[in-house]
Length: 188
Figure (tube, rainbow, N blue to C red):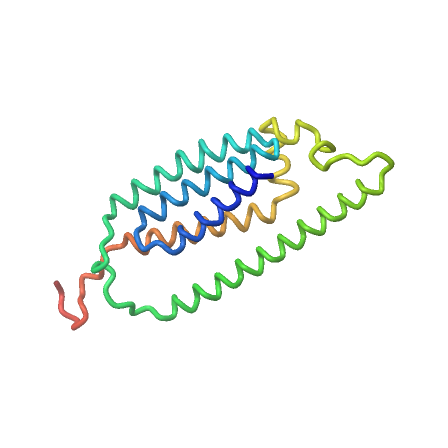
């Protein structure tokens, strides 16, 4: 319980630091810390395969790629200029609200399913822990992880893909060069 509390506190702190830092490099470093603490939480649940994937794929490969991209585009504060696209800010808030509603829906769905499983387990003659009632194969093989991911958790997986698509579009918008025509309409 103590290890879980420490890892959960590190994960929440790192998540807050990711979204509050102005420097993209420091945000990426805090995201790596977040990914590693999530891997620790997976390992505590006995999902060692997913924990290893979390560290190898996300904290390793993807975050190194993000840091290289951030370093290559060499962002500076004065590169952004005045924000002329106010509509994108409002569309961003709408998109964030949709993502929040989906997160609430998914959390409610998962909690309902979890409460149904615990009620049936509690009503049985011999109580077993929810972790004990699961097969070890649910966590150990890549086939079972893929089956759970694409069958049982297909909707959250698709929402995550939409979120990654939005991140890719955001990276293109940030990396795009400024227009060749400046504010007065003259070519540079």
